[in-house]
Amino acid sequence: MTLLLSGGTVVRSLAPPVVEVGDVLVEGGRVVAVGGAAPQGVGRIDCGGCLVIPGNVCAHTHLYSALARGMPYRLESPRTFVEILRRIWWRLDRALDETTIRASALAGGMEALLAGTTTLIDHHASPGAVDGSLDIVADALGELGVRSLLCYETSDRDGPAIARQGIAENARFVATTTSGARSLTRAMVGAHASFTLSEETLGACAELSREGGVGLHVHVAEDAADERDAEARFGLRVVQRLAASGAIDRRSILAHGVHLDPAEIEIVRSVGATVVHNARSNMNNAVGRAALAALGERVALGTDGIGADMFEEGRAAYFRRREEDVLTGMTWPLERLAEGARVAGEAFGEPLLGRIEPGAPADLVVLGYPAVTPVDASTLAAHWLFGIGAASVRDVVVAGEPVVRDGRLVRLDPQALAAQTRAGATRLWGRLEEIDVHPFEPGRHGEGAPWRT
Ligand SMILES: [Zn+2]
Image (cartoon, rainbow, N blue to C red; front, side, top):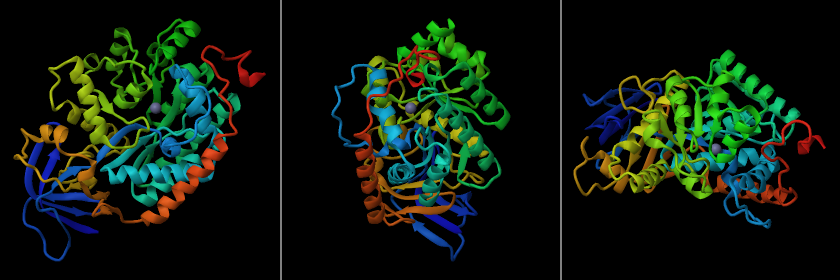
């Protein structure tokens, strides 16, 4: 398909900001020209008065939680991060079956596109339906037209058999995607977090990551409980443990990193791994604040499952950081979004992902944004923080194919989709009611662990 996005103000790059007025010519899934003479007789999207930006990347999310919104909750309120997991998320993921995995992925993928997010880096868990679960997620996102980087959240919290299934699902999916069968999907190796991983399971994940040539995607020091567990079981900090097992390298995604100490930050920076900061999730779970200044450039942004609106996430991260450091520059959120695109681009072998340059994958978002002050390279960051939002998203193109036009999904009928996701929510909530508080507690690995009794 050849497509011309004509007459818009084009954001060619977020970091550094590069902005120019001109046409974007798309062919064969890629940007082939920016500016220059427009050919006649090609499909045209009139972008006059609009901004054309690279599609946003959410660098850490959990599509499996997309149907949690409004779900019933009758247990005692959780008081700590581990209680939040045991009482909410580790019950919800156990309730998932193949029908509700698909409904969740459709719901989360739809919301992503409508918010201008074209790539999702997802961390999936469904211990009751592990085998084939990543195909279900990939199929749903593929139908919508979302680009994705997927993995299964391997963990020992549901026992060694489920941990082995998680490793096998990652291995199967790595093989599927390296065969090139899915053009919009790539794989990572997923692991939950140090505190729910045995040495054997972590070692298997590290080996698969090395042999498969893909990075590990793991939660790291999201809460102090993760650090306490690593120190008690191994006499090491979390990142020291991961590094000792050979699990982390420059392709790794380390989600949160709230409780990293300076020595761990030094390791993260020296191996070149990316930390994904999830500001709203961290605030919502009251886990603390990440040392963003010390973490430096290799920090991307994720929602951790709180939708996929990266305009909102970037704003929240910015204001939270400004509260503690008023010298935080306005370009900081744009640099973090560019880092997320770099990570995704590396996994796809597409170094220009996240830019609008000849040769870049044509993942583009048209914003109907009536700018009240001039938009150029020097003002873009201010517009991004104080003006632009997901409500401005008019059209979305992924790999050169329109997937949202005039604020509506192109490929799937929105009404039918909404009916499907609501039915999925009813089914999931019903199953959830039958599931008790998760028995796993940090420090109770091996003999005496609840799943062994
Ligand atoms: Zn997470």
